[in-house]
Image 1 (tube, rainbow, N blue to C red):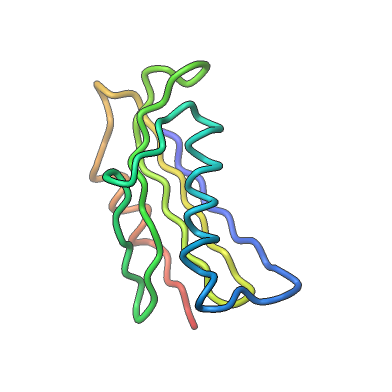
Image 2: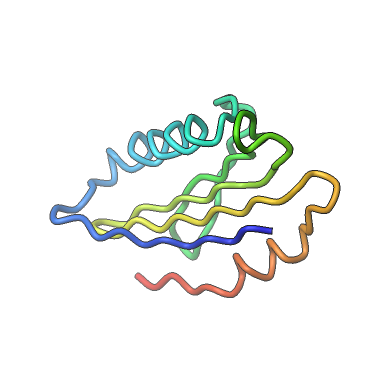
Length: 108
């Protein structure tokens, strides 16, 4: 399994009105990068404390064919958190994904 976490710090904050648009743009970018179809029915809300981000299910193709997983993104003001979890379809460990995601605490 591949478990990746990234944090980006913007020079200017993202307004609450632009959060959903920016998070959706990141989901689209990751789907394209991994050859996964962008489909709104595979996107759900990710609740972190009082904030909400997005989770997108990935079914990869091209160089990443055979991989499945989830992409998590949350933007708060100048911070953007991204978590990418990928594994082979036959051996994907949902427990490892849950332990990884739940091992972080995102503070306001």
